Amino acid sequence: MDPRDARTDGDPASTTTLSRRALLGAAGAAGAVALTGLAWTPAGAVPAGDPRATIPAPPEFPADIPLAQQRFENWARTIRFDAVWTATARDAHDVVRIADWARAHGYRVRPRGTMHSWSPLTVVPGESVEKIVLIDTMVHLNAVTVDPAGTPATVTAGAGASIESILAALEQHGLGWANAPAIGDITIAGALSIGAHGATYPAAGERALPGQSFGSLSNLVVALTAVVWNAAAGAYELREFRRSEPEITPLLAHLGRSFVTSVTLQAGANYRLRCQSFTDVPWQELFAPPGSPGRTFERFVEESGRVEAIWFPFTETPWLKIWSVCPEKPPTAREVHGPYNYFFSDSIPEEVTTPLGRVASGMQGATPAFGAGQFGAVAAGLAATGTADLWGWSKDLLFYLRATTLRVIAGGGVVVTRRANIARVVHEFTTWLHERMTHYASLGQYPVNMPFEVRLCTVDDQSEVLVDSAGAPNLSAVRPRPDRPDWDTAIWMNVVSIPGTAGQSAFFREMEQWMADHYSGDYAAFRSEWSKGWAFDEEGGHRDSRFLGETIPAMYRTGLSADEGWDAARAAFDRHDPHRVFSNGFLDRLLPPV
Image 1 (cartoon, rainbow, N blue to C red):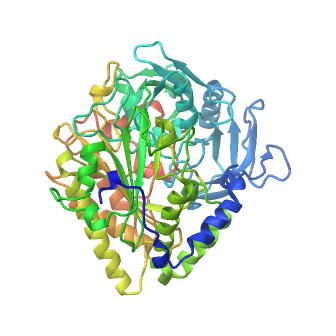
Image 2: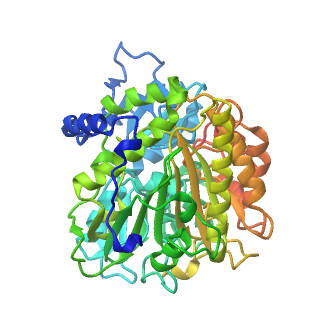
Image 3: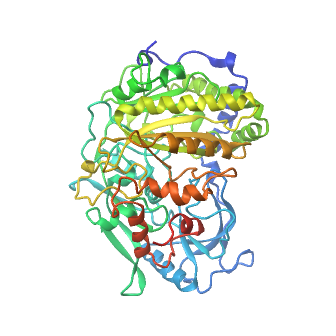
Protein backbone atom coordinates (compact mmCIF):
# COMPACT_ATOMS: atom_id res chain seq x y z
CA MET A 1 0.00 0.00 0.00
CA ASP A 2 1.32 3.45 -0.96
CA PRO A 3 1.40 5.73 2.09
CA ARG A 4 0.12 8.60 -0.05
CA ASP A 5 -3.07 6.67 -0.67
CA ALA A 6 -3.69 5.52 2.87
CA ARG A 7 -4.27 6.78 6.39
CA THR A 8 -2.39 5.31 9.33
CA ASP A 9 -3.75 1.81 9.84
CA GLY A 10 -3.18 -1.21 11.96
CA ASP A 11 -3.54 -1.56 15.71
CA PRO A 12 -0.22 -2.59 17.23
CA ALA A 13 -1.80 -3.51 20.55
CA SER A 14 -1.05 -7.18 20.08
CA THR A 15 2.69 -6.47 19.87
CA THR A 16 2.80 -3.75 22.52
CA THR A 17 3.84 -4.97 25.96
CA LEU A 18 3.94 -1.56 27.64
CA SER A 19 0.35 -0.33 27.82
CA ARG A 20 -0.24 2.64 25.55
CA ARG A 21 -3.71 3.00 27.12
CA ALA A 22 -2.11 3.69 30.49
CA LEU A 23 0.28 6.16 28.93
CA LEU A 24 -2.36 8.05 26.99
CA GLY A 25 -4.78 7.98 29.90
CA ALA A 26 -2.25 9.47 32.27
CA ALA A 27 -1.25 12.05 29.68
CA GLY A 28 -4.87 13.05 29.15
CA ALA A 29 -5.61 13.31 32.86
CA ALA A 30 -2.64 15.58 33.35
CA GLY A 31 -3.03 17.42 30.04
CA ALA A 32 -4.19 20.67 31.54
CA VAL A 33 -1.12 20.74 33.74
CA ALA A 34 1.18 19.89 30.85
CA LEU A 35 -0.12 22.70 28.68
CA THR A 36 0.77 25.27 31.32
CA GLY A 37 4.45 24.45 30.87
CA LEU A 38 4.93 22.09 33.80
CA ALA A 39 8.57 21.40 32.97
CA TRP A 40 9.71 24.99 33.35
CA THR A 41 8.29 26.14 36.68
CA PRO A 42 11.21 28.22 38.00
CA ALA A 43 12.63 27.79 41.48
CA GLY A 44 12.13 30.69 43.88
CA ALA A 45 14.55 33.53 43.22
CA VAL A 46 16.60 34.96 46.11
CA PRO A 47 17.32 38.67 45.52
CA ALA A 48 20.80 40.07 46.04
CA GLY A 49 21.21 41.13 49.65
CA ASP A 50 18.76 38.53 50.96
CA PRO A 51 20.29 36.54 53.85
CA ARG A 52 19.00 33.33 52.26
CA ALA A 53 21.57 33.63 49.45
CA THR A 54 23.98 30.69 49.42
CA ILE A 55 26.76 32.08 47.20
CA PRO A 56 28.75 35.31 47.65
CA ALA A 57 27.08 38.37 46.17
CA PRO A 58 28.87 39.96 43.19
CA PRO A 59 30.69 43.02 44.56
CA GLU A 60 29.64 46.48 43.37
CA PHE A 61 27.13 45.10 40.92
CA PRO A 62 25.06 47.91 39.32
CA ALA A 63 22.41 48.57 41.96
CA ASP A 64 19.63 49.48 39.53
CA ILE A 65 19.82 46.21 37.55
CA PRO A 66 17.71 43.44 39.15
CA LEU A 67 19.90 40.59 40.39
CA ALA A 68 18.80 37.38 42.07
CA GLN A 69 20.09 33.93 42.88
CA GLN A 70 18.22 31.48 40.66
CA ARG A 71 18.36 27.87 39.64
CA PHE A 72 19.83 26.77 36.31
CA GLU A 73 18.73 23.48 34.79
CA ASN A 74 19.15 22.44 31.19
CA TRP A 75 16.42 20.52 29.43
CA ALA A 76 17.85 17.02 29.93
CA ARG A 77 18.77 17.81 33.55
CA THR A 78 22.38 16.88 32.89
CA ILE A 79 23.53 20.39 33.88
CA ARG A 80 21.98 21.62 37.14
CA PHE A 81 22.92 24.36 39.58
CA ASP A 82 20.68 25.31 42.49
CA ALA A 83 22.05 28.84 42.66
CA VAL A 84 23.50 31.09 39.95
CA TRP A 85 23.42 34.88 40.06
CA THR A 86 21.00 35.97 37.37
CA ALA A 87 20.50 39.57 36.24
CA THR A 88 17.45 40.85 34.41
CA ALA A 89 18.62 43.24 31.71
CA ARG A 90 15.98 45.90 31.02
CA ASP A 91 17.55 46.85 27.70
CA ALA A 92 20.67 46.17 25.64
CA HIS A 93 22.60 48.92 27.42
CA ASP A 94 22.26 46.98 30.67
CA VAL A 95 24.13 44.11 29.01
CA VAL A 96 26.95 46.50 28.13
CA ARG A 97 27.09 47.80 31.71
CA ILE A 98 27.19 44.26 33.10
CA ALA A 99 29.99 43.32 30.67
CA ASP A 100 32.10 46.29 31.80
CA TRP A 101 31.42 45.46 35.44
CA ALA A 102 32.35 41.80 34.85
CA ARG A 103 35.67 42.71 33.22
CA ALA A 104 36.56 44.98 36.13
CA HIS A 105 35.69 42.37 38.77
CA GLY A 106 36.91 39.15 37.14
CA TYR A 107 33.45 37.74 36.44
CA ARG A 108 31.99 36.11 33.35
CA VAL A 109 28.64 36.77 31.72
CA ARG A 110 26.42 34.15 30.11
CA PRO A 111 23.06 34.63 28.37
CA ARG A 112 20.09 32.73 29.77
CA GLY A 113 17.10 31.80 27.64
CA THR A 114 14.90 28.71 27.95
CA MET A 115 17.95 26.52 28.75
CA HIS A 116 16.80 24.03 26.10
CA SER A 117 20.19 22.56 25.28
CA TRP A 118 22.44 19.63 25.99
CA SER A 119 25.80 21.35 25.47
CA PRO A 120 27.74 23.11 28.26
CA LEU A 121 27.84 26.37 26.30
CA THR A 122 26.23 28.39 29.10
CA VAL A 123 27.53 26.87 32.33
CA VAL A 124 29.71 23.81 32.82
CA PRO A 125 28.78 20.88 35.07
CA GLY A 126 31.27 20.40 37.86
CA GLU A 127 32.74 23.89 37.56
CA SER A 128 32.14 26.72 40.00
CA VAL A 129 29.56 29.34 39.06
CA GLU A 130 30.43 31.73 41.87
CA LYS A 131 32.03 34.18 39.44
CA ILE A 132 29.40 33.89 36.72
CA VAL A 133 26.40 36.14 36.17
CA LEU A 134 23.65 34.95 33.86
CA ILE A 135 21.58 37.56 32.03
CA ASP A 136 17.93 36.66 31.56
CA THR A 137 17.07 37.78 28.03
CA MET A 138 13.42 36.73 28.06
CA VAL A 139 11.82 39.24 30.43
CA HIS A 140 12.58 42.46 28.56
CA LEU A 141 14.79 41.75 25.52
CA ASN A 142 11.91 40.14 23.67
CA ALA A 143 10.37 42.76 21.36
CA VAL A 144 9.38 41.70 17.83
CA THR A 145 8.85 44.18 14.96
CA VAL A 146 7.97 43.25 11.38
CA ASP A 147 8.79 45.37 8.33
CA PRO A 148 6.65 43.80 5.62
CA ALA A 149 7.33 46.57 3.08
CA GLY A 150 11.12 46.28 3.13
CA THR A 151 13.23 44.78 0.39
CA PRO A 152 13.40 42.10 1.58
CA ALA A 153 10.66 41.91 4.20
CA THR A 154 12.27 41.55 7.62
CA VAL A 155 11.58 40.93 11.28
CA THR A 156 13.70 42.41 14.07
CA ALA A 157 13.64 40.59 17.40
CA GLY A 158 15.29 40.95 20.77
CA ALA A 159 17.57 38.18 21.94
CA GLY A 160 14.93 36.68 24.23
CA ALA A 161 12.06 36.58 21.74
CA SER A 162 10.86 33.05 21.07
CA ILE A 163 10.91 31.64 17.56
CA GLU A 164 7.21 30.98 17.92
CA SER A 165 6.47 34.62 18.75
CA ILE A 166 8.51 35.74 15.75
CA LEU A 167 6.71 33.44 13.32
CA ALA A 168 3.34 34.41 14.82
CA ALA A 169 4.17 38.07 14.17
CA LEU A 170 5.32 37.29 10.62
CA GLU A 171 2.14 35.32 9.97
CA GLN A 172 0.06 38.42 10.72
CA HIS A 173 1.70 40.02 7.67
CA GLY A 174 1.43 37.00 5.38
CA LEU A 175 5.07 36.09 5.92
CA GLY A 176 6.99 33.10 7.25
CA TRP A 177 10.09 30.91 7.04
CA ALA A 178 10.59 27.65 5.24
CA ASN A 179 12.64 26.18 8.08
CA ALA A 180 12.24 26.27 11.86
CA PRO A 181 13.11 23.95 14.76
CA ALA A 182 10.28 21.72 15.96
CA ILE A 183 10.26 23.44 19.38
CA GLY A 184 9.04 27.00 19.09
CA ASP A 185 9.65 28.28 22.62
CA ILE A 186 13.44 28.53 22.30
CA THR A 187 14.85 32.04 22.02
CA ILE A 188 16.06 33.40 18.72
CA ALA A 189 19.50 34.32 20.09
CA GLY A 190 19.92 30.86 21.55
CA ALA A 191 18.84 29.25 18.29
CA LEU A 192 21.20 31.37 16.20
CA SER A 193 24.14 30.80 18.53
CA ILE A 194 24.17 27.09 17.67
CA GLY A 195 22.96 27.28 14.05
CA ALA A 196 19.52 25.81 14.68
CA HIS A 197 17.68 24.24 11.77
CA GLY A 198 14.43 22.60 10.80
CA ALA A 199 13.32 19.63 8.70
CA THR A 200 12.54 21.46 5.46
CA TYR A 201 14.27 20.29 2.30
CA PRO A 202 13.30 21.06 -1.30
CA ALA A 203 11.50 18.55 -3.44
CA ALA A 204 13.10 17.73 -6.78
CA GLY A 205 13.32 20.95 -8.78
CA GLU A 206 11.96 23.15 -5.97
CA ARG A 207 13.62 26.44 -5.02
CA ALA A 208 13.13 28.50 -1.89
CA LEU A 209 10.64 31.34 -2.10
CA PRO A 210 12.34 34.76 -2.09
CA GLY A 211 13.20 35.69 1.49
CA GLN A 212 13.22 32.11 2.74
CA SER A 213 16.00 29.55 3.11
CA PHE A 214 16.24 25.76 3.28
CA GLY A 215 19.39 26.06 5.40
CA SER A 216 19.90 27.06 9.02
CA LEU A 217 18.12 29.97 10.69
CA SER A 218 21.48 31.77 10.75
CA ASN A 219 21.34 32.01 6.96
CA LEU A 220 18.29 34.32 7.27
CA VAL A 221 20.15 37.00 9.24
CA VAL A 222 20.59 40.36 7.50
CA ALA A 223 21.88 42.28 10.55
CA LEU A 224 22.52 41.83 14.25
CA THR A 225 23.65 43.85 17.25
CA ALA A 226 26.22 42.43 19.65
CA VAL A 227 28.18 43.59 22.68
CA VAL A 228 31.83 43.95 21.64
CA TRP A 229 35.04 45.44 23.02
CA ASN A 230 36.07 48.93 21.87
CA ALA A 231 39.83 49.10 22.38
CA ALA A 232 40.01 52.84 21.83
CA ALA A 233 37.40 53.53 24.48
CA GLY A 234 38.60 50.78 26.79
CA ALA A 235 35.04 49.54 27.26
CA TYR A 236 32.37 47.32 25.80
CA GLU A 237 29.76 48.78 23.46
CA LEU A 238 26.82 47.85 21.25
CA ARG A 239 27.76 47.42 17.61
CA GLU A 240 25.54 46.64 14.66
CA PHE A 241 26.87 44.22 12.05
CA ARG A 242 25.40 44.02 8.55
CA ARG A 243 25.37 40.79 6.52
CA SER A 244 27.73 42.40 4.03
CA GLU A 245 30.47 42.79 6.69
CA PRO A 246 32.95 39.92 6.99
CA GLU A 247 33.00 40.43 10.77
CA ILE A 248 29.41 39.17 11.01
CA THR A 249 30.07 35.65 9.75
CA PRO A 250 31.54 34.29 13.02
CA LEU A 251 28.67 35.85 14.99
CA LEU A 252 25.98 34.04 12.99
CA ALA A 253 26.69 30.83 14.96
CA HIS A 254 29.00 31.88 17.79
CA LEU A 255 28.51 29.00 20.29
CA GLY A 256 28.15 31.42 23.19
CA ARG A 257 31.41 33.34 22.62
CA SER A 258 29.48 36.53 22.00
CA PHE A 259 26.35 38.25 23.32
CA VAL A 260 23.83 39.17 20.64
CA THR A 261 21.13 41.56 21.86
CA SER A 262 18.95 41.80 18.75
CA VAL A 263 18.76 40.38 15.26
CA THR A 264 17.07 41.19 11.96
CA LEU A 265 16.11 38.32 9.67
CA GLN A 266 14.59 38.20 6.21
CA ALA A 267 11.27 36.49 5.54
CA GLY A 268 9.18 35.39 2.57
CA ALA A 269 5.59 34.72 1.64
CA ASN A 270 3.82 32.37 4.02
CA TYR A 271 2.26 29.22 2.65
CA ARG A 272 0.09 26.27 3.59
CA LEU A 273 1.46 22.85 4.33
CA ARG A 274 0.02 19.38 4.59
CA CYS A 275 1.60 16.88 6.98
CA GLN A 276 0.76 13.19 6.63
CA SER A 277 1.87 10.55 9.13
CA PHE A 278 2.33 6.86 8.35
CA THR A 279 3.21 3.97 10.59
CA ASP A 280 2.99 1.00 8.21
CA VAL A 281 6.23 1.17 6.18
CA PRO A 282 8.83 -1.39 7.32
CA TRP A 283 12.17 0.18 8.12
CA GLN A 284 13.99 -2.06 5.64
CA GLU A 285 11.75 -0.71 2.88
CA LEU A 286 11.86 2.91 4.02
CA PHE A 287 15.64 3.00 4.52
CA ALA A 288 16.46 0.89 1.46
CA PRO A 289 19.58 1.39 -0.68
CA PRO A 290 19.59 3.94 -3.53
CA GLY A 291 17.34 3.12 -6.46
CA SER A 292 15.21 0.60 -4.58
CA PRO A 293 11.53 0.28 -5.48
CA GLY A 294 8.67 0.83 -3.06
CA ARG A 295 7.96 3.30 -0.29
CA THR A 296 11.46 4.59 0.24
CA PHE A 297 12.85 7.62 2.01
CA GLU A 298 14.57 8.49 -1.26
CA ARG A 299 11.28 8.51 -3.16
CA PHE A 300 9.47 10.67 -0.62
CA VAL A 301 12.32 13.16 -0.56
CA GLU A 302 12.14 13.54 -4.31
CA GLU A 303 8.38 14.04 -4.19
CA SER A 304 8.07 16.31 -1.15
CA GLY A 305 11.53 17.09 0.18
CA ARG A 306 10.17 17.59 3.69
CA VAL A 307 10.47 14.15 5.28
CA GLU A 308 11.19 12.95 8.80
CA ALA A 309 11.37 9.43 10.15
CA ILE A 310 11.35 8.43 13.82
CA TRP A 311 12.28 4.79 14.40
CA PHE A 312 11.69 3.45 17.89
CA PRO A 313 14.10 0.77 19.11
CA PHE A 314 13.31 -2.85 18.29
CA THR A 315 10.23 -1.95 16.23
CA GLU A 316 9.60 -2.74 12.59
CA THR A 317 7.85 0.36 11.25
CA PRO A 318 8.96 3.96 11.93
CA TRP A 319 6.73 6.99 12.38
CA LEU A 320 7.07 8.67 8.98
CA LYS A 321 6.03 12.31 8.51
CA ILE A 322 5.78 13.88 5.08
CA TRP A 323 5.14 17.60 4.64
CA SER A 324 4.13 18.99 1.27
CA VAL A 325 3.29 22.47 0.00
CA CYS A 326 -0.49 22.42 -0.41
CA PRO A 327 -2.37 25.68 -1.16
CA GLU A 328 -5.83 24.08 -0.91
CA LYS A 329 -7.07 21.79 1.86
CA PRO A 330 -7.29 18.14 0.72
CA PRO A 331 -10.67 16.51 1.50
CA THR A 332 -9.10 13.96 3.86
CA ALA A 333 -6.97 16.45 5.80
CA ARG A 334 -7.97 18.15 9.04
CA GLU A 335 -7.34 21.89 9.19
CA VAL A 336 -5.44 23.12 12.25
CA HIS A 337 -5.23 26.67 13.55
CA GLY A 338 -2.28 26.42 15.90
CA PRO A 339 0.93 24.44 16.47
CA TYR A 340 1.75 21.40 18.65
CA ASN A 341 -0.96 19.12 17.36
CA TYR A 342 0.55 15.80 18.46
CA PHE A 343 -0.58 15.99 22.06
CA PHE A 344 0.20 12.35 22.68
CA SER A 345 3.93 12.90 22.02
CA ASP A 346 4.74 16.53 22.75
CA SER A 347 2.80 17.22 25.94
CA ILE A 348 3.39 14.18 28.09
CA PRO A 349 3.71 15.55 31.65
CA GLU A 350 6.47 14.72 34.08
CA GLU A 351 4.09 12.54 36.11
CA VAL A 352 4.29 10.13 33.17
CA THR A 353 7.80 10.67 31.85
CA THR A 354 9.60 10.28 35.18
CA PRO A 355 8.30 6.75 35.92
CA LEU A 356 8.98 5.71 32.34
CA GLY A 357 12.53 7.01 32.64
CA ARG A 358 13.08 5.01 35.82
CA VAL A 359 11.78 1.85 34.20
CA ALA A 360 13.92 2.33 31.10
CA SER A 361 17.13 3.08 32.98
CA GLY A 362 16.66 0.55 35.76
CA MET A 363 15.16 -2.38 33.87
CA GLN A 364 17.21 -2.52 30.70
CA GLY A 365 15.74 -5.80 29.54
CA ALA A 366 12.41 -4.02 29.13
CA THR A 367 13.83 -1.85 26.33
CA PRO A 368 12.15 -3.77 23.47
CA ALA A 369 8.80 -3.51 25.25
CA PHE A 370 9.47 0.15 25.98
CA GLY A 371 10.20 0.77 22.28
CA ALA A 372 7.00 -1.02 21.30
CA GLY A 373 5.12 1.05 23.85
CA GLN A 374 6.43 4.30 22.42
CA PHE A 375 5.47 3.30 18.91
CA GLY A 376 2.09 2.03 20.10
CA ALA A 377 1.37 5.35 21.80
CA VAL A 378 2.15 7.20 18.57
CA ALA A 379 0.07 4.92 16.35
CA ALA A 380 -2.87 5.01 18.74
CA GLY A 381 -2.50 8.74 19.30
CA LEU A 382 -2.57 9.54 15.59
CA ALA A 383 -5.78 7.54 15.19
CA ALA A 384 -7.45 8.80 18.36
CA THR A 385 -6.72 12.48 17.75
CA GLY A 386 -7.23 12.58 13.99
CA THR A 387 -3.75 13.91 13.39
CA ALA A 388 -2.49 11.54 10.68
CA ASP A 389 -3.37 14.09 7.98
CA LEU A 390 -3.10 17.78 8.89
CA TRP A 391 -3.31 21.01 6.89
CA GLY A 392 -2.62 24.58 7.91
CA TRP A 393 -0.21 27.50 7.86
CA SER A 394 3.45 26.60 7.82
CA LYS A 395 4.32 27.44 11.44
CA ASP A 396 1.40 25.38 12.75
CA LEU A 397 2.84 22.27 11.11
CA LEU A 398 6.53 23.05 11.64
CA PHE A 399 6.16 23.36 15.44
CA TYR A 400 5.25 19.94 16.79
CA LEU A 401 7.28 19.40 19.98
CA ARG A 402 7.03 20.97 23.42
CA ALA A 403 9.51 20.93 26.28
CA THR A 404 7.22 18.42 28.04
CA THR A 405 8.15 15.55 25.76
CA LEU A 406 10.45 12.82 27.08
CA ARG A 407 13.77 14.25 28.28
CA VAL A 408 16.59 12.50 26.50
CA ILE A 409 20.29 12.57 25.68
CA ALA A 410 21.09 12.84 21.97
CA GLY A 411 24.06 11.58 20.00
CA GLY A 412 24.77 11.81 16.30
CA GLY A 413 25.15 14.84 14.06
CA VAL A 414 24.86 15.96 10.45
CA VAL A 415 26.25 14.51 7.24
CA VAL A 416 26.93 17.02 4.47
CA THR A 417 26.94 15.45 1.03
CA ARG A 418 25.32 15.43 -2.43
CA ARG A 419 21.58 15.07 -2.86
CA ALA A 420 22.16 11.86 -4.80
CA ASN A 421 23.73 10.30 -1.67
CA ILE A 422 20.72 10.69 0.66
CA ALA A 423 19.50 7.09 0.41
CA ARG A 424 23.02 5.71 0.70
CA VAL A 425 23.80 7.76 3.83
CA VAL A 426 20.58 6.81 5.61
CA HIS A 427 20.74 3.15 4.57
CA GLU A 428 24.32 2.75 5.76
CA PHE A 429 23.62 4.33 9.13
CA THR A 430 20.40 2.44 9.85
CA THR A 431 22.09 -0.83 8.83
CA TRP A 432 24.95 -0.08 11.23
CA LEU A 433 22.55 0.92 14.01
CA HIS A 434 20.43 -2.21 13.66
CA GLU A 435 23.49 -4.45 13.69
CA ARG A 436 24.99 -2.81 16.77
CA MET A 437 21.76 -2.74 18.76
CA THR A 438 21.12 -6.38 17.88
CA HIS A 439 24.66 -7.24 18.94
CA TYR A 440 24.35 -5.53 22.31
CA ALA A 441 20.92 -7.06 22.90
CA SER A 442 22.44 -10.51 22.38
CA LEU A 443 24.72 -9.66 25.31
CA GLY A 444 21.79 -8.51 27.43
CA GLN A 445 22.78 -4.84 27.00
CA TYR A 446 20.46 -2.04 25.90
CA PRO A 447 22.40 1.25 25.81
CA VAL A 448 19.72 2.96 23.70
CA ASN A 449 16.03 3.02 24.58
CA MET A 450 14.67 5.90 22.51
CA PRO A 451 14.36 6.44 18.75
CA PHE A 452 16.59 7.14 15.80
CA GLU A 453 15.52 10.33 14.00
CA VAL A 454 16.42 11.55 10.53
CA ARG A 455 15.52 14.86 8.87
CA LEU A 456 16.98 17.04 6.15
CA CYS A 457 17.81 20.60 5.21
CA THR A 458 20.24 22.15 2.74
CA VAL A 459 23.58 23.80 3.30
CA ASP A 460 23.56 27.56 3.91
CA ASP A 461 23.12 28.69 0.30
CA GLN A 462 24.20 32.31 -0.15
CA SER A 463 21.98 32.73 -3.20
CA GLU A 464 19.03 32.61 -0.78
CA VAL A 465 20.28 35.69 1.10
CA LEU A 466 18.55 38.73 -0.45
CA VAL A 467 21.07 41.31 0.75
CA ASP A 468 24.78 41.55 0.07
CA SER A 469 26.40 38.73 2.02
CA ALA A 470 29.96 38.38 3.21
CA GLY A 471 29.52 34.63 3.24
CA ALA A 472 28.05 31.69 5.12
CA PRO A 473 28.10 31.49 8.93
CA ASN A 474 31.64 30.33 9.83
CA LEU A 475 30.62 27.72 12.39
CA SER A 476 27.24 26.66 11.07
CA ALA A 477 27.12 22.87 10.98
CA VAL A 478 25.58 23.20 7.50
CA ARG A 479 27.99 25.74 6.09
CA PRO A 480 28.97 24.77 2.52
CA ARG A 481 32.38 23.47 1.53
CA PRO A 482 33.78 25.71 -1.25
CA ASP A 483 35.92 22.83 -2.48
CA ARG A 484 32.77 20.68 -2.83
CA PRO A 485 30.09 22.83 -4.45
CA ASP A 486 28.13 19.67 -5.24
CA TRP A 487 27.62 18.98 -1.52
CA ASP A 488 24.26 20.72 -1.20
CA THR A 489 22.50 18.51 1.37
CA ALA A 490 22.58 18.16 5.15
CA ILE A 491 21.25 14.91 6.66
CA TRP A 492 20.60 15.17 10.39
CA MET A 493 20.75 11.80 12.12
CA ASN A 494 20.40 11.43 15.87
CA VAL A 495 19.85 8.59 18.31
CA VAL A 496 18.37 9.49 21.67
CA SER A 497 18.22 7.72 25.01
CA ILE A 498 17.02 8.48 28.52
CA PRO A 499 19.70 9.98 30.82
CA GLY A 500 21.33 7.45 33.10
CA THR A 501 20.97 4.47 30.78
CA ALA A 502 23.82 2.02 31.37
CA GLY A 503 26.33 1.93 28.52
CA GLN A 504 24.81 4.95 26.80
CA SER A 505 27.93 7.13 26.62
CA ALA A 506 30.14 4.32 25.35
CA PHE A 507 27.58 3.54 22.65
CA PHE A 508 27.34 7.19 21.58
CA ARG A 509 31.14 7.35 21.47
CA GLU A 510 31.26 4.29 19.22
CA MET A 511 28.53 5.71 17.01
CA GLU A 512 30.12 9.16 16.75
CA GLN A 513 33.51 7.74 15.87
CA TRP A 514 31.96 5.51 13.22
CA MET A 515 30.07 8.44 11.67
CA ALA A 516 33.15 10.68 11.64
CA ASP A 517 35.26 7.96 10.02
CA HIS A 518 32.66 6.65 7.59
CA TYR A 519 31.23 9.90 6.25
CA SER A 520 34.50 11.36 5.04
CA GLY A 521 36.77 11.86 2.06
CA ASP A 522 35.16 12.46 -1.34
CA TYR A 523 31.86 10.96 -0.13
CA ALA A 524 30.70 13.28 2.64
CA ALA A 525 31.66 15.25 5.75
CA PHE A 526 30.41 14.69 9.28
CA ARG A 527 29.84 17.55 11.73
CA SER A 528 28.54 17.66 15.28
CA GLU A 529 25.20 19.27 16.11
CA TRP A 530 26.17 22.07 18.50
CA SER A 531 23.07 22.01 20.70
CA LYS A 532 23.19 18.25 21.34
CA GLY A 533 25.69 15.65 22.56
CA TRP A 534 29.13 15.32 20.95
CA ALA A 535 32.76 14.56 21.83
CA PHE A 536 31.68 11.52 23.86
CA ASP A 537 33.98 9.48 26.02
CA GLU A 538 32.99 6.54 28.23
CA GLU A 539 31.51 8.88 30.84
CA GLY A 540 29.52 11.38 28.77
CA GLY A 541 29.47 14.03 26.10
CA HIS A 542 31.69 17.09 25.56
CA ARG A 543 34.61 15.36 27.27
CA ASP A 544 36.87 13.69 24.71
CA SER A 545 39.94 15.90 24.44
CA ARG A 546 41.07 14.62 21.04
CA PHE A 547 37.64 15.10 19.52
CA LEU A 548 37.44 18.61 20.98
CA GLY A 549 40.97 19.61 20.05
CA GLU A 550 41.41 17.90 16.66
CA THR A 551 38.27 16.40 15.14
CA ILE A 552 35.93 19.36 15.59
CA PRO A 553 38.38 22.04 14.40
CA ALA A 554 39.09 19.92 11.31
CA MET A 555 35.37 20.01 10.49
CA TYR A 556 35.74 23.77 9.95
CA ARG A 557 39.20 23.82 8.39
CA THR A 558 39.00 21.12 5.72
CA GLY A 559 38.07 22.66 2.38
CA LEU A 560 37.85 26.19 3.80
CA SER A 561 40.19 29.14 3.45
CA ALA A 562 41.91 30.64 6.48
CA ASP A 563 39.48 33.57 6.62
CA GLU A 564 36.24 31.60 6.68
CA GLY A 565 36.61 28.70 9.07
CA TRP A 566 37.54 27.68 12.59
CA ASP A 567 40.60 29.85 13.14
CA ALA A 568 39.01 32.93 11.62
CA ALA A 569 36.08 32.57 14.01
CA ARG A 570 38.38 32.19 17.03
CA ALA A 571 40.32 35.30 16.01
CA ALA A 572 37.09 37.29 15.63
CA PHE A 573 35.86 36.19 19.06
CA ASP A 574 39.17 37.32 20.56
CA ARG A 575 38.90 40.74 18.88
CA HIS A 576 35.31 41.24 20.00
CA ASP A 577 35.92 39.94 23.52
CA PRO A 578 39.66 39.85 24.33
CA HIS A 579 38.91 39.62 28.06
CA ARG A 580 36.78 36.51 27.49
CA VAL A 581 33.93 37.95 29.52
CA PHE A 582 31.59 35.98 27.25
CA SER A 583 33.07 32.54 27.79
CA ASN A 584 33.30 29.70 30.30
CA GLY A 585 35.72 26.91 31.15
CA PHE A 586 34.44 24.59 28.44
CA LEU A 587 34.58 27.26 25.72
CA ASP A 588 38.11 28.13 26.84
CA ARG A 589 39.08 24.57 25.95
CA LEU A 590 37.04 24.33 22.76
CA LEU A 591 37.89 27.81 21.45
CA PRO A 592 41.20 28.78 23.08
CA PRO A 593 42.81 32.13 22.21
CA VAL A 594 44.48 32.21 18.82
